[in-house]
Every structure is written in structure tokens, then in C-alpha cells.
Length: 416
Image (cartoon, rainbow, N blue to C red; front, side, top):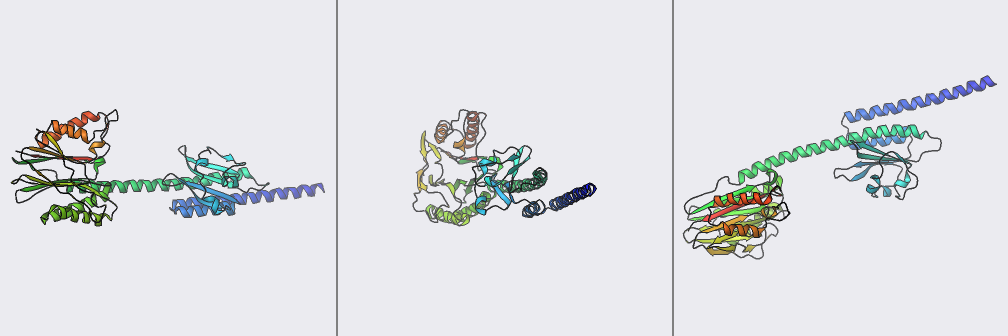
């Protein structure tokens, strides 16, 4: 009887070992399937389905929730087993940060985390990229071996998903790089590289787009008759969208100017063009001045732009008459056309608001009043001489501080 019992016990152990080996083989086969799926670039949703199926059928896991880091660095539940959907919508961000390593979960105040027995963080270069919660283990289950294998497969899945995320980021960065390059090229084509200088007037510019691409616009129009116009604008936003709006804006501007319509209907039509092109999603601050060399009359409209400084006879005149910004409303409700008789030599300094964002090492701003004061003290200079002196002055002011945004200056000197 003793020999029979020993033989029976041996067979039982053999059958148990055989079942364990069969299970291990199934697990390894499924692991190979998942690895092959990753190599074949299976979409993330497919990997999550394989992962969930593996844990449910091969590993016998009754409760599971896998949290993956999103593009915006938030966390979402990518797949789950045996958990009520209402619990999966609860925010677990603060609790996830407390799990530094594999932990047993006893009683937890969080109603979702309280459903599980074990949490397994997955880290890549010491940064958490996933958390898997496991629960519903039976009393006689080999929890240690199960958790070991689940940890292995979770690491494989999580790293594969993280690599997909990083690859998408790389593609997006390359796309943005190409977009910025195209936008920069377009803007350089739209902004004049040279401005006129003669014995009656002179124009000179400073153009510093931030990171190579900005929303600033400079231009001038030299008529066949004794008039010329100069303008400056600031388009909301950056990149290709701003560059495309700038191109559309310039086309509308030149088309309307060539029609020789009066100032008020000219701005109304320009506003309508911007509103239609931007669909109300972007706007432009804009200043345009037109000077008649014979009558010496300056006509201007300031559409929500920083008031340019006009220095004439040692006095400061802020060119602030006009209307609201362009593109915000389908029709501009109120408008005032500015008119000034320029009976002596004058300096007109137009600029974008990036100039007033410049700071020194102590955090003080180079504001509009700083520019007005500098213009009063240096109004005798030529347009180019003024801009060169202004750049030197700003560089001394900001010290080691970088330019925080793009800024532009268009200076006009009208000789007496």
C-alpha cells in the first residue's frame, strides 16, 4: 500500500509539473506573440487588447487596470479587467505618484485603488511611464510567480507604448520644424529687406522675429504721385498660421491701396478681409500713415496698435487716433482718422509690443514711456541712425536678458 501511495503521489507531482510547464509554454508563446506584434508596429489599441486578453485568459487575472501616460503628461486607464466603468473615470494622479516600487495594497481610501491587491510601477530612465493594478487573487494561487510574469510583460508593453509616444513627439517636432522654416521663409519674403531713403524722407526698420518666426509685419508703399505710405502690424499667434494670415493681409492691403479709396472705407475693407480670412480666430493690431510730400499732411489710422511716437519741434505727439483691432468684429463700429500738418522736420517711430516686453536684469521693463523719452532725446538723428542707437540702448538696458518675444520698429524721418 505504501508503494502504491508513493507512486500515486509521484504521478500527482508529475501531472502538476506538467501543467506548470504547459502553462509556462503558453505564457512564453503569448509573450512571443506580443513581441512580434510590437515588431510589426501593431497600433497601441491592439497591444492593449492582447495584454488584457493575456492577463485574463492565460494568467487568470480577475481584476486589472493599466494606466499609461498621455501626450499631455496626464494619466489614463488604457485597458482593464473586471472593474466598473464608473470607477475608471476617477482621478488617480496624486495617488500614482506615491507608488515608487511594487507594493501590496491593503485598505486604500481611493475607491478605485481599493479594488486591487498589488500595484506594479513601470519606469523608464527612473521616470514612471505606466502603473498596473492587479487584484482578485485566490487563496491558493502562486501570486509571486504571477506577479513576476505580469511585471515582465507589462514592462514590454509599457516601453513599447512609450516608444510610440516618443516617436510621435519626434515626428511632431520635425513637422513643427518644417512648418517654422516655411513660415520664416514666407515672412522674410513679405517683409521688405530695404526701405527708401532720399532727400525728402527716409525709412528704416528693425525686424527681430522671436526664434526665427514672429507675427510682426512691416511695409511701405511708394505711390506714383507725391505720396508714400508706411505701416506696421502685429498678428496674433506664431508659426505658419500667422505667416499665411500675413500673406493674405499683405495681398488685401496692396489691393485696397491701389484702389486709392479714402482712409475710413479702406480700413473697413481691410478689417473685413482679415475677419473672413481668420474666421474671427485671430486679429491684427495695425498702424498705417500716409504722407503727402506737397501738402505735408500726414493722415493715419491706429487700429488698436501701440501709439507711435512723432517728434516734431521738440514735442512728442502720440499717434493714437483710429479704431479697434482688425479682425475681431465683422464691421468696425467707431473710427477716427488722424490728421497732422508736418510743417517742420519730424521723426515718427512705430513699434510692436514686443519692444515693451524687454526687461533688464532687475526685472524692469523697457516700456512705451522709455521709448518716447529716448525718441525725444534722439529725434535729430536720421531714421537709420536712430534705429542703430535704439538697438545699442536696448542691448545695454537688457544686459544678459534675452529678447522675450519678437519685436519690430519702423522709423520714418521727414526732412524739413
